[in-house]
Amino acid sequence: MKTKIAVTGACGYIGSHTIVDLLQNGYDVICLDSLVNSNERVLLGVEKITRQKISNTKIDLADPLSWKFLAEEFQDISGVIHFAALKAVGESVQQPLRYYDNNLNALLNVFKWMDAVRIPNLIFSSSCTVYGDQCSLPVKETQAFGISPSPYGKTKQMGEWMMMDFLSASHKQGISLRYFNPAGAHESALIGEDPRNPALNLVPVITETAIGKRESLTVFGNDYPTRDGSCIRDYVHIMDLARAHTLALEYLLYDKMSISFDAYNLGIGQGISVLEMIHAFEETTGQKLNYQIGPRRPGDIPEIWADASKAEKQLQWKPEHGVEEIMRSAWEWERRRN
Image: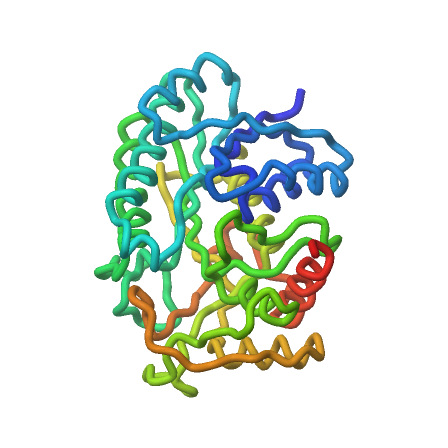
């Protein structure tokens, strides 16, 4: 019998690519998604890639009764991978109550479901934003949480604290994966980043500008204390990120972790500026971008990149794709979906 894994936020960008990796590694996957910022049509692409039909159960995990429905419908689960959350930094600054209500209540209801039907393992979708705006670079997991400049980042900090308490008290185990800017698409170009709302992440904004959906791209600030004045980030290919979730899950399933909670950075380990990403896209695809310099965006920090050596050592995870492959795959996906 296949090991059954529940994936919340399954139709989203990271969730859908992780489902592909899980299915290709022999897992039975239960998809859960409210479809607030995603679309079920992504599962058609997953089916073409994996040759396995999969359906979504539409559910709002922030609903206080959601855990009871899940406990009645889905049992005999070996683990939950929890992606379901609102994730736009700027929007969270404007709508903090919405972010606290959705992100924290959804996580609480996952805990209640896990408790009710004795699900032993949890993978939490976290972010490098937990480190706040004062970091020693490259960032290691031992870095203490700083003051996050956005409510989104604060919900990820709170989520990890809640997770530590819950796992310890319930004698379960879990891993928090702290992402450093996922980007790119599956090599087939059958799935990629396809938000229901206007794209906010840099790479899809770049590809939408190149294909003509946007007149121009705005670089938010060129007066940061960085090598070219624009923000510096660590980008990781979406399929490398998806693979990390399967490896983290297996680390738990095979009883390799001796503590109830641990966290891992996921990034290439190289800081790249916004302007450098623009030039990398132009060089990789031959497409020229129309961009302009604008004011700083609320909630952004100047620079951050990862030390991901812990994930390499303990989870046996190492990124296989660089920035060129991120840009090539993102561009192929953009062209295919239009």
